[in-house]
Length: 384
Length: 171
Image 1: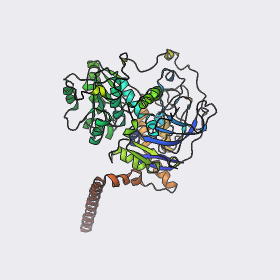
Image 2 (image 1 turned 180 degrees about the horizontal axis):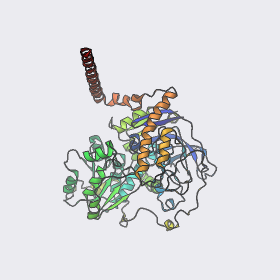
Image 3 (image 1 turned 135 degrees about the horizontal axis):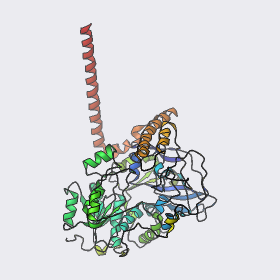
Image 4 (image 1 turned 30 degrees about the vertical axis):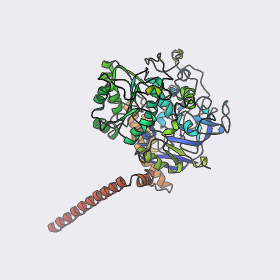
């Protein structure tokens, strides 16, 4: 089959590899029909996530058709069109049973801090991802769901990660009616977080980034104010002024370990890798939020250490809330929101690219060429 | 402060998920007390271990499922095995894994060539997209790179010439 193949930092290609097999009685094999490139895929593409092995196929946002079913699978059958949450969850461990599906303890031998994730290095379990014609999906009765017939496939693929992650970012903010919410990062997750903040009754939503075309898009998609941090001076002081020198009620870090904006963070975090990425957005979030406020983190960071003003967290009495998204928990609600017409996630998709052109697709997304916001890869077998 | 978006309540879906009880002082979970049972849940069937899977020393047992792709091999595999002797809180774990990743990149190129495939690095880096969408910057990068390489070549050839001249003077 054709699959995306990681060859080293900034180097990927489409190449042939063996089709996946059933390896556990609760597995299914899925013929992929759509697979997105996630913003967090860029961290592994850039070589920032430890234990990313050459030959790995990335892709944790995908949908497809069930083509093979394990002997213990009860709810899925051949021919079902399913969407697959990025988390691999057993549904039986203490964490899954409390709906922390991203923290499953039965899906990742290589680390205890993270649950299994499709195509996201061996630090997340060593599973191949969905940027391929076929993919193995463990615990098929737990995470995946049959795509309702009234849900557009492009909306369905965004329900596997980006929309739920953005929504959970807002949810973790504990937003109260009338709150001012600041979202750092106008990438796909930041856009979804900003849009979702209104669902919780926000009174004002501000998004901060430096990519002008994304800021323009944020204004219409997320109905929010959008500012370029390269033209507002110190973003922390700017946000203090915007909030009557009080601070935002809620700040959301939707950037993670590759944030721009601070030479010190960029050099030590990205260039020299002396910390687990550049934590500029988180730094700004902590310093821009009000005393007693909430910082919600969905940006991805590496497993070691980061330079953040923890003293200010203490002095300001902040609540920091974070997790990988528990996609399965949120699916019923978010499908309902799409049906009600509150949101059309697929509006953020700017590119549909054949899987054969995966090298170009990654570069376009990584270098933010051609006004790219969200890329969907289409395998050849899904185009026939 | 004045809110520039006066009509925010008219945004589709505004306030549908308002939850005054959502005080985020606890992770979002349905607490059921199972935490105190520790690892004693009813386990799923166990995936048979057919090859080498590295396991964190913080796991007392193999999780029920795992990925089997790209098992540790070669020099990078040896470094990964060393990394997995350390727990997830130690630099010995993560720095060794990063080192192994970099070694693995070189192994990947060698492996490609061994299989008769000379990797097209430019294509793998998506340069075709640069040519299509970012031509001006790509051309300027190529011009600068060519100028630097030419300058280095000229400098080194001049050095060689002067060394030769110096040697012939000595002779």
